[in-house]
Image (cartoon, rainbow, N blue to C red):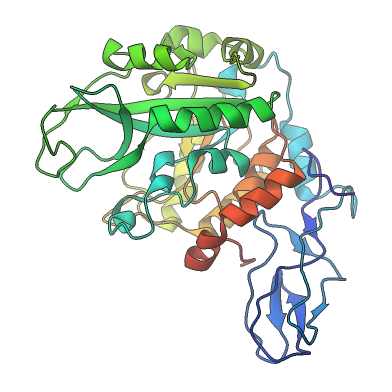
Length: 387
């Protein structure tokens, strides 16, 4: 059975193999990686999502090259996995409040649009794939930071309003149709867009340059909301209403005319729990413990738990940290009651986290698409390796 649903186990029966090595070399799965037994070189594993290699993972080359490899996703193999059990525990009722519903959220989501040759990627990039691709990989909330020139209706994405900032070439007007198309194909899913860090840039030539000063605005300012309305983006800036909203009410409010559900929310309505001191991997878990202890039973508004390393100069994207977060979701109660779990580098174990958190479905087609989109992250960050 090739089906990837909410409670499907994370197991694969083949790994995508490279073309190196002599004919006849045997490529076998070892510790979740495909290895050439002659050269013992790690290969890209199938398990973008943190899956396990099955016993029949051996692939042998033919005289014309490597045999075609494919990721097989089976259903209900080996009973209930840790992910299955966790998803069962986390799946709640649609009558639950939105602030009690778990969402996997990508941090600084639009930085996935930074070009490969853009030298600012080290200083700005927290994701490696585009917005709709992040949704395909399991994100159900996006962190969008907006900037608009005072003499243009186009809204762009940015990282930082300081001197070393990045502004996207892509606009919200250009990306919104892609997100709508994604939602139309998945009418049961609810996506939350958290709009924040809204800025107005001077309407002069070169407003993107490092030397232009921006003016901070509330995202609920008509300067922005008028454009949201033109685009047909369901928008909510009434924080009391957001805090009292149920998951079912959010889906009703977020219904798109074309089909699907996307709700844009003012970031001021969500507690960010930002802590700049979490600038080392060892400080993430203590931060999560403090934040979850504080917010789990007393939160009066939606809240984020930032499970990533805060930027000093460059942006840390850590595959081992994401693996640790996944482990804590599935083997402990650390994240029990989490609302918006925010991560860097969704390509590393993000799909597993989304399934474990519950409230979402990942199809086999989406899994394969995510895996394809994340190839660059696999190469640069080891995002697809079993560590």
